[in-house]
Length: 296
Image (cartoon, rainbow, N blue to C red; front, side, top):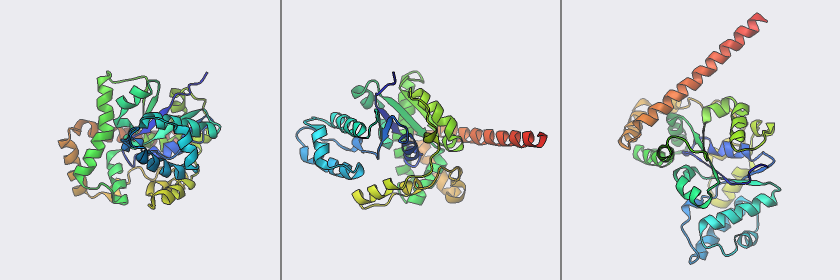
C-alpha cells in the first residue's frame, strides 16, 4: 500500500522548486498546487480575519469558492491544522491521494513540519548558487549581497545544518539537484518517486509547459512571476550556467563574500564543485554516445 502522508517541497528561491512541483502534479496520485506560503502566516484561533485573508488568496490560486475552503478548515485553531485540512480537501476533490505543499522556506522549517506531520517527506531542490543569483538579478529581487546571503542561509544552509544534527541523513529527507533534473528528468523523477514510495509515471518526466498557474497568481496578487512565465515552456537545460552571461565577476565576489561571512563558504564551494561534476558527466556521456554511433 502506498503512503498518503504529505510531501513538503522547498529550496532557495529560483532553484527549480516550482518546476518540480508542476512536474509532480502530473502524477495520478499527487496533488501539487501553487504554494500556500503557510510559513508566513502566524495567526491562531483569535485571528480569524487573518485566516480569512489567507484563504481569500488561496481561493483564487485553487479556483475554489472561499466558503468551501472555510468549511474544509472548520474551526482549526492554528495554521498547521488549517493547511492540513485545506490540502486534504483539495486533494480529494481532485481525485488524488496525497498532497504536496511547495513553499521555498519549507526546508528551513523541517523541525516544525515533522512536529506536526511526523510521517511527512521533505524534498529539497538545490541549484548552483551562481545561477540562483543570476535568476535573482533577472527578477530584480533580493540582489543585494547581504539580502541574498540571508535568504540562502535560511534555506539551503538551514536544511544542511538540520541534516547535520541527524548524523547526515534522515529517512524523511531527500535532496535533488536542479541540474540533474533538467538534464535527465526521467531518471531523476523515477528515483524521487521511488523515495516517495510512488509508482513511476512517464508523464511526470515529460513536462511540456504549464501556463495556467501564471494567470492565477497574476489574478490573485496583481503581480507577474518570471518563474511561472518560464513554466509555460517545456523543460530545458538552457538555464544551467546562466550566471556566465548575467553575473559580472565583481557581483559574484561581493555575494560570495556575504555568503562566507554567514558561515557558508564550505557549502557554497561544495555545491559549485558538484555542478562541475554534473556537467563533466554529461560530456563523458555525450562522447561515449558519439563513439558508439561512429562504431555502428
